[in-house]
Image 1: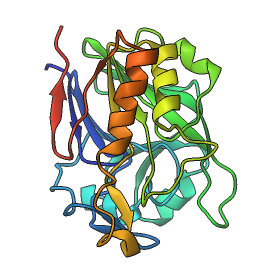
Image 2 (image 1 turned 135 degrees about the vertical axis):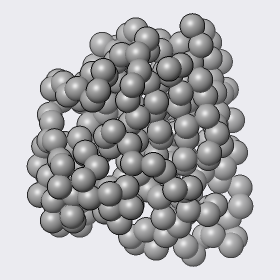
Image 3 (image 1 turned 120 degrees about the vertical axis):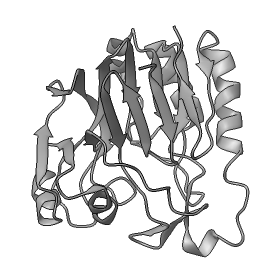
Amino acid sequence: MTPRITYFGHATILIEVGEARLLTDPILRRAILGGIIRRAEAAPEIESPDAVLLSHQHADHLDLRSLRMLGAATEVIAPRGAGKRLRRGGMTAVREVEAGEIESVRDIEVVATPAVHDGRRFPFGRPVEALGYDIRGGGARIYFAGDTDLFPGMAALTGVDVALLPIGGWGGNEMGAGHLDPERAAEAAALIGPRVAIPIHWGTLLRADLHRRDRDLHGPPAEEFRARMAELAPETEIRVLDPGESYELKD
């Protein structure tokens, strides 16, 4: 199978590589916890993947109702310490991992990578690390960063074909420590050196009170990312995907 990446918005990406179908941080409903809504309709119905890759426990990444829509027996690979919440929420096949550990999904290796981000469930959750994932096999390496700040260890990811890099947030919020903005995402791309960079985590989710009056959140982060990439990582191809759009990695 030609490696195929389908972006459903925010950090929800279907990665089809080798014999495996992997879904990251599924947010499949129109409205989620805390009055956060999608700009568009809910994501289309997705056939249950071989595994879900969960980066951390924030409400815009871990939505139990979205996970249950995939089926309670859907396998979830998640940071160590997140399993209790997932099992209480009805998920029955949870694998907990730490950075550096490797899990197999069909013919694909999934390597948990560090992330610099507070991964606890706010406001009262206990500390649980956030993760990214380095997906290897099927003729490709794909890095899903989850939520993270820039850190020197990204340089160890050289050899990645596609980097899925967060460039913004939701609701017009400014991104502070623990996040990538367009400039820091371009710096991350310069460290990693992927063939292709796809910006994620931008332009999809809004606070409900912004939905009617803020219509321009979709474009500017991607435009700024393009500009910074031209300066810092000009050899990397940029693919900006709209929700529902796919990209196939060619040889």
